[in-house]
Amino acid sequence: MSSLEKLKALRKLDLSDTAIEEVPKGLEMLVNLTYLDLSTVSLKEFPMAILPRLSCLQYLIFYSKSCTVKLDGSEAARLRKLEKFEGRFNELTDFNDYTDSIRGQSRTSYLLVMAPPEAKFKVNEKTLKLKCDGVRDSRVSKLAKIIVANEGVQSVSFNREKGQVKVVGQVDPVGIVHKVRKYFYVEILSVGPNRRFPSLLPKKEVILSGCQIGRDPVVLPTDLMFLRIFESHNVRSLSDILIFFQQANQLRVCSVEDCKGIESILDSSLSSSLCSPLENLEYLWLERLDNLHVLIKLEAPLSISSSLPLGIFSHLKSFVIKECLNMKQLFPFKLAHDLQNLEKLVVCDCVQMEEIISSEEENQEINTPMEFSLPKLRKLELKNLPELKSICSSNKTIVCNSLRKIEVSKCTNLKRMPLYIPLFQDTDQSVPSAHPFKVICIHPKKWWESVEWEYPNAKEVLLPWLVLI
Image (spheres, rainbow, N blue to C red):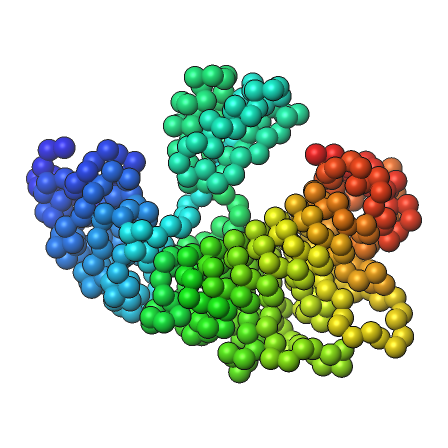
């Protein structure tokens, strides 16, 4: 690329997804530049001394997974007109210098990554949908191998009926199609953001990976809405980093992944106010926490007469837990009453999970049937939980007036479904479209035939919505 020094009136420069390895010559002369996008994998370095010359910048984007572009926090902090900024810091001092400079200020949008060069994390995941002729026949395993071999692929699923493939991850759609096309007919149906998390607008997101966050001080923006933590193995509980949640009281989404030290999410012995860290949280995602064995660690075992502090998860809308191999019980029964705003519950690949809502630990003198309500629950997914024996204790019913989707797959030890939905007593069952309920997906068929429901005619009522997967 030729020198840009004569383009002094230029206000926008977009070099995203190009093959440049260094910034164009003369970039520092573009003093009127307000928009600069350098989000390209190939860029090897960026001379930070250029930044003060570009004092009019309002929009500055770097490739957030770059290990080679070294961002200087103090230099970035000098760009006082920035409204949108995305980039990765390799050093905690640089990250803190920048975040400290914007505390109390209003940035329209930001994605700030703090990760040493060797750290791994996920960012900007996409969902790619393909139509492919290899889905419906025996070639599907070969197709899967071709797709999985691509860098950044996190999951692949197939819809044999429609002949479609869904690929999730930090993927290159064109690259995947190019490789698949050597063996199969394929076309792209859609490419979009992965909906594992809500699309928060404006984006105010921080990713921390490979950091000693329980030991080293981390400064977070005060208006932070989305926090993702990866590979921080020294933290035993989110209560260890209570200061994070005190700094960022607007936090709505939190994900914790691949942190081997996490044993509980909250620990009453480490926090004087048990419910304070997460009481405003709306979305919580826990994945591959090998040593997680309980959500809430209490100093002494709870009795029936004792009660958990109220409001621990009172704002929670979505809870996803995956591949937490030492979890046996998910929610204490007394905590279940806090889940009145819960809309989505997903439990997957937790191979020791036995109960979703645990039984009370002491026998009641009068063991009368009880019911409680999850009034806003719309989606329930239970997948690959081979030890799951109950959703809640045998004398309780969960009333779910808003439930739209149920998926139960590979939960062969689950003998009873304690759910009640209004559909069970609706007289107008001949018109499926009149009901909010959308689908119940089941695998295997043998489990569906043997499982018992709280309502005696539940299987007959649900038949129009049943999909065997």
